[in-house]
Length: 167
Length: 437
Ligand code: SF4
Image (cartoon, rainbow over all chains, first blue to last red; front, side, top):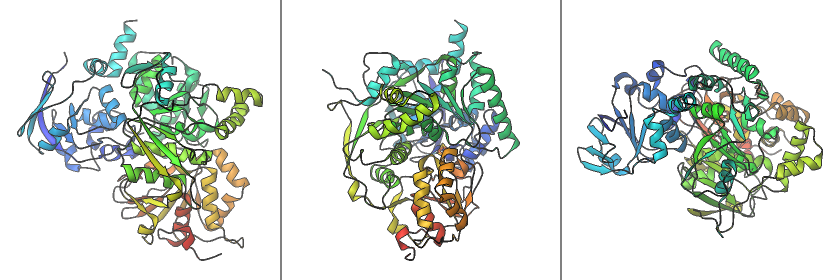
């Protein structure tokens, strides 16, 4: 069953955070998956993150989160670290796709990004399409049905596996 | 009558639909699927899908370029696994280490043609906009899905039109044009958009300049870039298509033109920008963002410790020619560099042509280092990683913190001539500032 409500502690970052600082290029051909990815998450942006992140934590960021390379580890390193949701003012195109395809929920909500502060606990509610934080409630646009289908399946590969197995 | 953008026409073609609306999600069958050293990781995801055979092996193209020759055992294992997969699956378009950078090699082999749709597990796939193809980057899972099914979902993007007027002044390059667009409209100015160039200024650009421009639109956040293909493009591709396939020149020309697409004049766009090429000047992107752009004059004199000429943005013959011209005095003698200069041609073909033209001789006489055609230190894998505290001037497309492998280094981006001049002085230098002669 797909989770409809996420509650977690916020890590807050700025605008134009690129994939090189989320997951350094020098590891891209030697580290592909598994928990070792989480150890390098946000290594060149915030060394504290990999040390203290807890499952369920939520990243809140400014515009153009994930710009730069197409490397999927910039998504999966966060998934491995237990992050399930990123709320941003906007996402780079490939990052957005990679997130959906790996079951990481990308929420676009500039108003919430302005209101939310580092360290506070927020709720992301997919039924009401709103983010609840200390400063109030902020609505976001519902996901398109095609993307919802992928997220509900747990990502593109699980969806494909089910499809191929079903003939 | 409705008017359509290039993106609408290209996606409709690849989806086998008469037309598609902007904003809708459709399934396309890409003509070409590009991957490189990351194919090893894609193979593991491919296995996860449960598929055994690649659906259309002839549509794949795989290059070994990002860490080639392999710098570590781990990298070498990746390459070995990829070679095995290529043999097992009968993938014909496979390019070994030293052949060159994926975007350059697929262009040189005419493995992508105008109007076609190529998806690449590489963020610089908008490169193929240089010839009027639809090129977009995708992630590794998506590439695994394409291998398994031959298909992928795409949302039909909005279009941003950029009209180019006039022509570039002497000493101003397509790199400066790309940096101008980034500096003026910001690194997210093209996010998710099909950036479609228009205007008579396009015709003034040669093929290499078009590649540089379309390639660097990746830093603008675009889904794809597009330059309307003309005789220059068709001719360039036809020669190479004929070489690869063995067909005659007329047949080759017919093949490369047959799917060319042009947007309708009244197609809907979110905005129309105008860039007057004649007004541009040499530019530099400063650490740590490609859109942190300043005029060369504003940063000239800053100390650098290493210079790098290469990458899919600026590693072509024309780029090496411009750099060699800076290093060669009019009396035929060669200037000497004072900081390490690493030169890595974008492909073996470029290297061969640069040898024939004497550019390689000039680089070596000047004291430069020559690397195996490929990505080199562009993304910090090997062949020129800076020390902490060092400053690099590079012809690459990205200067994010840590991009070249060292967090505590700084990278400036500029055109090849400026990088060459800076290698001579050890400071960011306009080529015209070098002593006369
Ligand atoms: S040269 Fe650099 S930007 Fe181009 S494909 Fe290689 S790593 Fe990517």
